[in-house]
Each structure stands twice: as C-alpha cells, then as structure tokens.
Length: 302
Image (cartoon, rainbow, N blue to C red; front, top):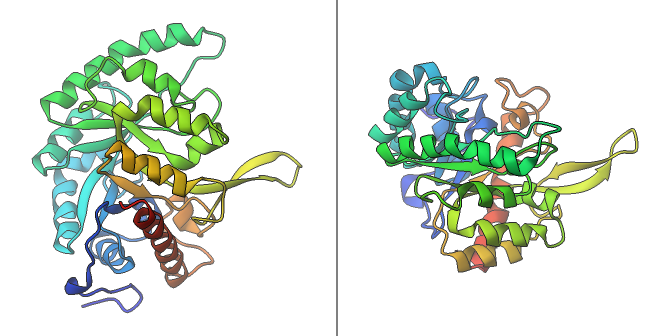
C-alpha cells in the first residue's frame, strides 16, 4: 500500500532522460527500504547513489546480507543503482573486498572512494608519491571485480583532491576504468571559483567517472568569518550552464548525483530523523532542485 506522505508516480509517467540523475541516499537516511525507494521514484530521480558505510543504508559488515535485497527493492521501483558510496580509503579498509565482491555480483560497477589526507609539515610531492603504491593495490583489486573507484573531490585544508590537480598526479598512470574522479562541481568551485574549476576539470577529464552536483555562496558567519554556505540549486555561485556544456563536450555518461547540503533538517546531514521539518517540505525541495538540474541538462543537450 502506498504511503500518502510519500510522492507517487505511475510507471508509465517516468520520462526518458539522456543523462540519468541519482540521489545521494545520505539525504534519505530517515527512510528505509520500500519507503526510500518509493520516495526516490516519486520525486523523479532515475536512481540511487546508495550509502554502504557506517551509519548508512547498509553497514559495511552487513554488505553481503543487506545490499542484495535493498538493491532488489530499489530496482523493483524502476530505479537504478549506478554507484554506491563507501568508506574505502585503500585495500586495508575493513570489508573492502566484501563490498566489491557484493556490488560486482549485483552488476554495480562504480563506488565513491576517498579520504586521503596530507600530513602537515611534510613535502606534498613526496607524500603523493608515497600514496601511489596504495592506489596501485586498490586499482588491482578493482580490476579483479571490474569496479571503478571514483575519488570524491571535497574542499578543505589538508584534503587530498581539494585542488583536484593532485588527483591528476596520483591517477595519471592508472587505468581510469579502475580508479577515477567523482568531480564535485560545488567543492571544485569553492576551491577555484574563477578559473580553477575549469582547469581542474580539464586536467582530470580523462579520469572523469562521476559528477556530484551542489551549489553554494560565500557569506560571513556570526563571527564575521567568510564561509562557504550551501544553497538550493541555482541560488549559488556554481556556473552550471558553462559547466554542463563542458560535461557534454567530454562525452560523460554518468553516474550523476544530486546532493542537498543546505538546511533541510536531518536530511542535510544524513540523520535518521528530520527534526523541525516535514517530509513534504524535504521532498518539495528535492523535486525543485531536480527540476532545476534537468533544466541545465536540457540546455546542454544532456
């Protein structure tokens, strides 16, 4: 029976899109199983970037038992699972091979990878060279399971991949089908708002395997300090028309993920409860942003 609090959509109403859009399931952590899949389909998404990590929809130690039935539920609703988001940093991450083996058995070929950091006071170039053997081992493991690890580009101090150029140094000699980049347009613009995001996109384009979408502005906090504040899509500083024209020229085919990092109660941070906001308000915001994203994609013929 359908839950009246969830958005519903008939199967024959589902439109065809050239570039499919998945929701990052962190923002639906207050829903599980059927409810999560039903909401995703009702909002209008094509698929789910599923959290398979501590506190996610699937706990890493339960991946063999819990991922297959959940993927089955999602697919039953006409949705895809083009990727999963995990806590894998390298081959030493607990349950890494269990995760890869299980996703491969389900035909899922992409997962979001990351978490490398620089040690303060040590030369960065030398640290990058020291990271390469770890990446080589991960690439080899991925190749065994025909999987691709897509390094997510966060912003921040000491974060490997923040500038994105360092990912070129790390990945340029590895097979892009085994290790690639999940290019976050919002974080890339935070780190290089004028032209840096263009340069970083171009240099890592051969390893581009995923794209995450979010928007932001610079604003002062209560203490007068400048901070990046995430905003609904189209209300921030990310140059989406120009960005998606570049994406179209690159031949990118997905997975494309939409994130909701601006204030949406517990949905923002991946909490199990929403707090002082209703499901209807959350779904409405998600549907609005998805519509805005579809508009940008249509302009770029994607």
